[in-house]
Length: 210
Image 1 (tube, rainbow, N blue to C red):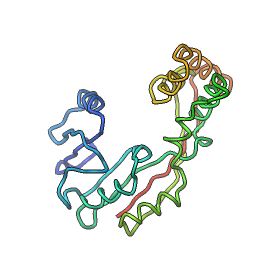
Image 2: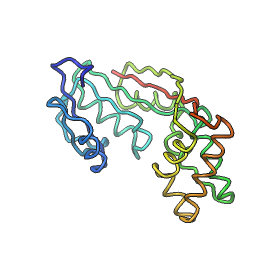
Image 3: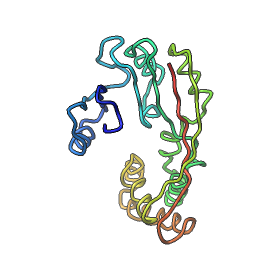
Image 4: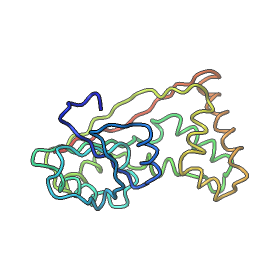
């Protein structure tokens, strides 16, 4: 909030109330409020906001164009809709290594959550076309490459295997293999990136529409 002008207020939303509760416990400001909201059915009047921003969320929307239309509806004339999506999993090294490692545990039915969902909506032409279909006129897409740094190989392994819905897919196949999958993922990350702090490529598209 410190980076925004004093006249700006922010309404932060999510579909998951526990996540909102956790976030609210971390950040407090008189200009910041929190609300449980479905992005596909925003409970706000038309032209309510100057900007709508979504951080790595649209990949999870069942009906993406419906969510884009809702974003357009609640924007003031000239307002901006900005969101980002991960590029394909091959350009996101930790996620790719973890997916391949977990697949070794379940070779006949590899869990593919990471490739299918967070990294499954990567085609910029498809994304931009959907945003335009929702009524936005000026739409741009920029690809950004950065580095993801973690203190050790275990940090991204635990984060992906135990802190995302990939865990659900592992446990649905064999819950007793969760630790083994995590350890193998850590081992594969270490083999590729070293035994100390690890540093892997990440890549995403930033979409700006008005």
